[in-house]
Image 1 (tube, helix red, strand yellow):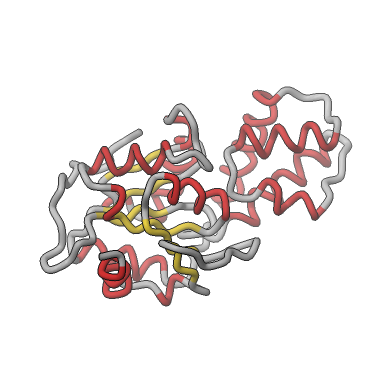
Image 2 (tube, rainbow, N blue to C red):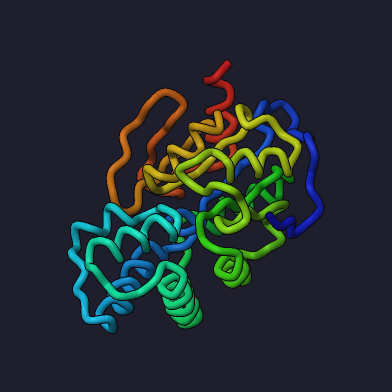
Length: 233
């Protein structure tokens, strides 16, 4: 877990119960979920295997240990999990080095959160080496804290990453708004006790208690996030 700027403690926005905003990365802020699948397809093709498109919904949003392990088992590829993880991370770094599109509304939302000094953390199942590359495009100044999937004992769908982020910021998870794009990430945030805004990328997500579903980040602003906290009272 790495802090990119000094932690902001328990400071809250005036007149709001919102204490912090915790944001997923792939598929939420950057349009990269398709990149991962493309890289997985290319790597397994080089190993002599073709991936079934139906597997994409199985591996999306999860930790690399789960997705890579599933693909090894499903294909019978002769490669270890450690070897495959290196190939996938290398391939992904090459892809984002060529192009890294932000999701619609992402730049505006980050700018607003920074302008209003809302403590914000980036919480991803991706490894630290990937997060640090993506931060160059997102702007590290927007995040008080970043949590990578290889820095916590258990990554998503377990609550550990979001609990670590809340603890690092010195805030109550119940007063955090989490923005996620996959069921795996939503499960992690809800297990941590956070209110979730789901912006589905690959697979549908249904609304639920403490879970609001929107079509795009363009629908999410500070008023919207503060409103979620008000509804919880």
